[in-house]
Length: 224
Ligand code: DC
View 1 (tube, rainbow, N blue to C red):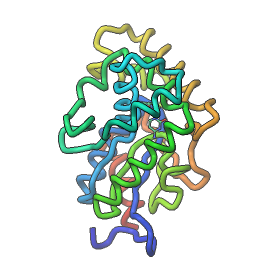
View 2: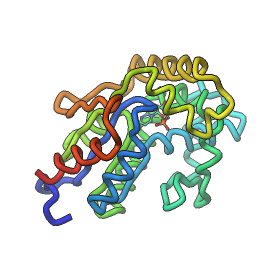
View 3: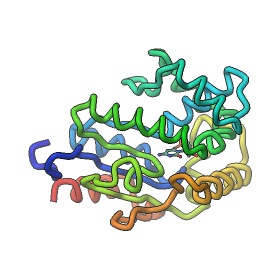
């Protein structure tokens, strides 16, 4: 990590934002490995909050009820992925039910505040240096991130990539594309921290380039 860009006095964060199906997870994990940094999938923390709401019979539109329930649980991220109360729930947060409800839960501003606090604390506990993938890392969670990247890809490419994920196993390409478009709309039009590139983010279209090329570009940005 010696030659990594350092911002004096602040956490060293590589922020990788963008919608689903652009290759964020694969790229972010590989960048973290190459730079020897911790890796946090922030989407999984919103998914954990959604799972907590759903498994307690809470209406995902009821922000107060979600917050009250969240206060009685811990959300963390370990080697096996996201954890609720110390237990990995990585597969459980990838069900179609959680996927269908996560945009509603993550649109609540006070839920976001709570989850963002968990994410910042996680980075602090991991030596103030990490690669984070999400939707608002470069705009809200770490606006001083050392590197900000926003990944995009054409809609049909994103749908094809998502088709390979376990959560989409039973859906047709058309259903996946519709689902992605609906989630994009919800995530980019919400009032609280909408999905958008930071003004100073490097935008990389991953449609026609391989993962390794994307990873190298980001590693170059982090070590230039
Ligand atoms: O990356 P993902 O598909 O697991 O994210 C699930 C949802 O979480 C996504 O639809 C929007 C929300 N999310 C968010 O609002 N902010 C983030 N930083 C990450 C995810």
